[in-house]
Image (tube, rainbow, N blue to C red; front, side):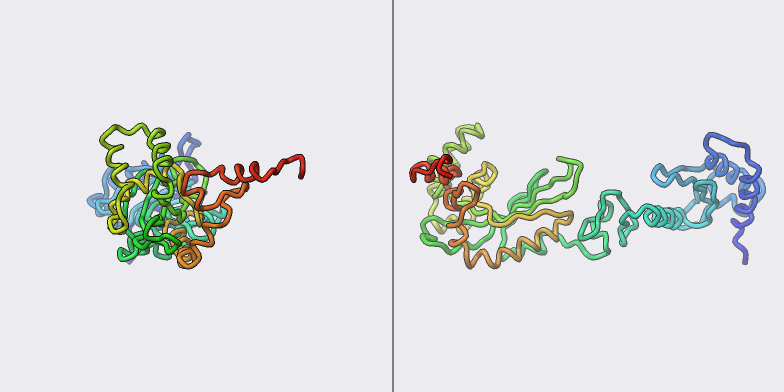
Length: 325
């Protein structure tokens, strides 16, 4: 049986051939479609609204059907299409992406000129644009190993439940945190996410490091009291996560050592890369923290103390001078 919309489409194609130049020809064509449906095809009129609509992204005009599953008349760039609005839009988007070498999400068809090759999230459906799944962080950071702390506007934090085995582990309790930074909204360029493994040790920061942090934050007395109480907690309380607030503040202040960092356009992808590095770090943490963290030779231990200029001080005490270089 012939699709009755074909007769409407044929009339519209003839209309386009004889149409006078207008400012918005597609608008005129779809208005003519509404008139033809309701004036010449009574069997169709009950299925379509006597109105039309335009999508700003694809510049697609269509006659509004009673149900989104119904086929309708669509017009774009002087060409008449028959189909559901979704199918016609998908076809036009796919053609645009092909003509302009733009990546398109294989799950939902959404596209964006900033999508790139590789692992990237679709800004519309949240899956990867290559069609693969994009699991939630909670499924990657298993609860037995990680404690969820916070997911804010700019950072998401998880705390590793197992203290890193270094000398004086029980005394100092070096703790690993996973930090995911959200770049979207802060700048227009990709990548969208940054992920890192950071180590924090409040006992090494000591009263001097904590005081410097507090002075920069301007907390009220009640908060300051709680911070000092957390600094004095024993190993068991630390393992139970009762020092989380102080640890997080030190990380945000910068009194921490960064073991590994990466960036990308998929939360799950950058998280997987970090977790792969963590396996090695838990074995060689002490050796890594002995190594320089910056160009002047300050070690990871000194970073956790808040003494990032220690390397420069050593250069001075050893008599090093740039005139000798």
